[in-house]
Amino acid sequence: MTVPAVSFEFFPPQNLEGSFRLWDTVQSLAPLDPRFVSVTYGAGGTTRDLTRDAVATLHKSSGLNVAAHLTCVNATRAETLAIADGFAEAGVSDIVALRGDPPKGSGAFVPHEDGFANSVELIEALAGTGKFNIRVGAYPDKHPEAADFKADIDWLKAKIDAGANEALTQFFFEADTFFRFRDACVAAGIDAPITPGILPIENWKGARNFARRCGATIPAWVEDAFDKALRDGREDLLATALCTELCSNLIDGGVDKLHFYTLNRPELTRDVCHALGVTPKVQLQNVA
Ligand code: FAD
Image (cartoon, rainbow, N blue to C red; front, side, top):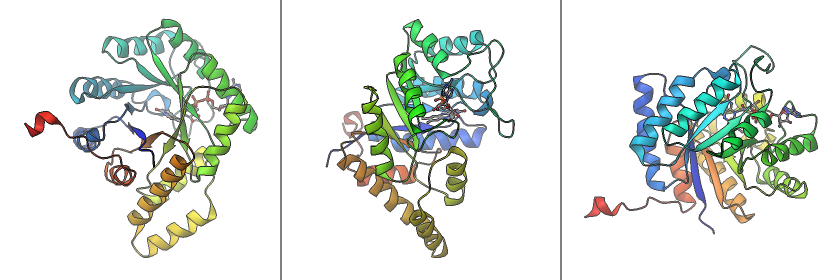
């Protein structure tokens, strides 16, 4: 079986305890030699400064290739581009460019009157600077706001044509969901790599609520399996097995890169990576 290249998503810490947790997560996953790690940008732009600080610190201290998420929400074009410039000045040239969601409970996305109207405008502006490697979001189960599956793929093509280099997908539960999406993207002329986003499920109730909000289809057999595992106190075991099986089915279908949503908890991600043959790279300076 091909050993995949991996990448990891983190969220920025909100307090000292969160900072230690993030650092532990980074220390635990860094030996797996990720292609990059990314730091999210809170809904509604709520973690703008925390994201900037976490990105700069990880870039300086971890030796990893860091990608900063950036959204259009609640900011003028000038403010958004100034944040991107700040990343470039800190030496970070990888950006995950998103339209973003407004803060919880505030309804649909409404562009700032002087802001980017959508993700394509943001991507065009970032690409126009020539400073960034741009990744974007993609939705194998269809984004809840898309008119239909085809419209969603046409929009992804517009994002790639605007200057994005790679798409990272929302999480999903079955490999066929990804393969159907990948085939439709190829048929639509999308030639950028599409990397599956993988959520190791630490907490089934939280993951189920999140899946419902973001439109990911939850197969009945997954619901049943977690009901039984919760009853038997074996949630972690099931989560590791399901996630490992999903990843190996993806790899059998030709996938060579995986992007893990770690939620700043390294254990399941690390166990799944090990099961897939992604094992720690020995640091020669630590052996000598
Ligand atoms: P888009 O792809 O631009 O739009 C979403 C969908 O709406 C499209 O797929 C398309 O079908 C439709 N659509 C939108 N505008 C148009 C248009 N003008 N014409 C036609 N169709 C249109 N959110 C955060 O707040 N912070 C983060 O850090 C963050 N990180 C993420 C990372 C990844 C890998 C993914 C997949 C999502 C992430 N999100 C994050 C969630 C994301 O912000 C939401 O899913 C948001 O609703 C859509 O953002 P987008 O850039 O993917 O939108």
